[in-house]
Length: 373
Ligand SMILES: *[C@@H]1O[C@H](CO)[C@@H](O)[C@H](O)[C@H]1NC(C)=O
Ligand SMILES: *[C@@H]1O[C@H](CO)[C@@H](O)[C@H](O)[C@H]1NC(C)=O
Image (cartoon, rainbow, N blue to C red; front, top):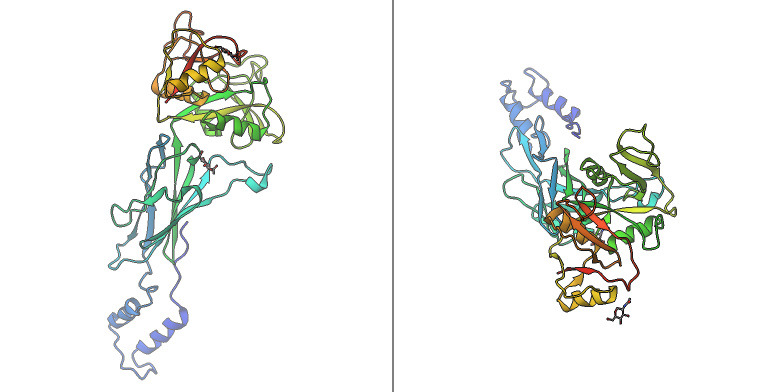
């Protein structure tokens, strides 16, 4: 948004004009060559008149940036003046963030979507806020480069970032969308279907090294073929499910493929969850072990191998992002049994790739185990 340039103070200029008019009543000798006038206009030292006609431009070459969890990312933002300035001006830069993982009003006004500050910088001084403290800096690779560098990206850093340049007279901004590469997976409680209220869903995803999926993440997953006929919570407090193959009981055959939505639901109502997991730093592997294991043995076997039993989000990330493919059912940390298939084949489940699930079997049954290190 470009605020209007402040006009020359009218009183001052009329006065100057009077002084400069030939034959006017002023006592100062008149120089009516225009030069003197211009000189006064540009050189009175208060900086504002000088600035007339100069425009501040703030730009980003990339409106959207995608990155992986744990990595560093640069959100580009540059500013310049037109025409170029002979002397540099003091500018203030503010980066703020509209998190993707916010509940929209009116369900919970307290937690409603609003921009929060990430960093404010002026000259060489800067300050960062909240969970960004100590993780962000300005790149400053050239004059006017106000690109934001975020280190150690977390799952919940996704959203829209605004780069705002303020120089006293003008205020211009540009936004950059940050997405994380990852995978969406449906998740339900060990106790059965539709057991999570909003907060329980949030916690369940976190327990699986994941976060509640945003609408955009679920939409992308649907575009990539996710079809799931059970409604789940999303980060914005809505309840939805993705259908690629319309059928009875899932919105009906007359409804086009798409996300079926119940809209915003009361936070205490119960559904499943759609979680989002992104690349993990370590590796997920099927433990080589001479015999099959019950759940307690499985937990212990991973520990003896210097690892931990893998979480569901870690298995999905390894399947989707690392191509993990293994036709052996294994225990996971939540007590579920699953296996990841990237190349569908006989005796390894349905004819599409996917993470196959046996649900939550009794703990004394024997399977393999997936560990994470
Ligand atoms: C984002 O996730 C991190 C680590 O999981 C957590 O410490 C932080 O509080 C979360 N931030 C928000 C805004 O939820
Ligand atoms: C798993 O097997 C061990 C013996 O190896 C046994 O002590 C334990 O109770 C079993 N756990 C379950 C949950 O059945």
